[in-house]
Image (cartoon, rainbow, N blue to C red; front, side, top):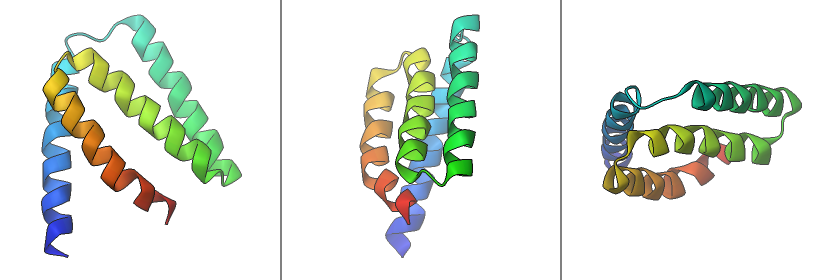
Length: 90
């Protein structure tokens, strides 16, 4: 279980940095897209649609990552997502 704590630490560190960098780059259009994705996430949760939840969750985070303009951090966040995302189905 020690690996899980390390994994969470790394993911939170990278994602926090991506969000910090994205805040100076986000446009009104991106905010509108994030709001739509958030609504889609809520709808998936309400419907018990796990696949939809995973898709919208990924798209929400990816939209933020793109705004960060940090390709190496983005690539690492996506790798972590591929390792962690499937466990959200549980």
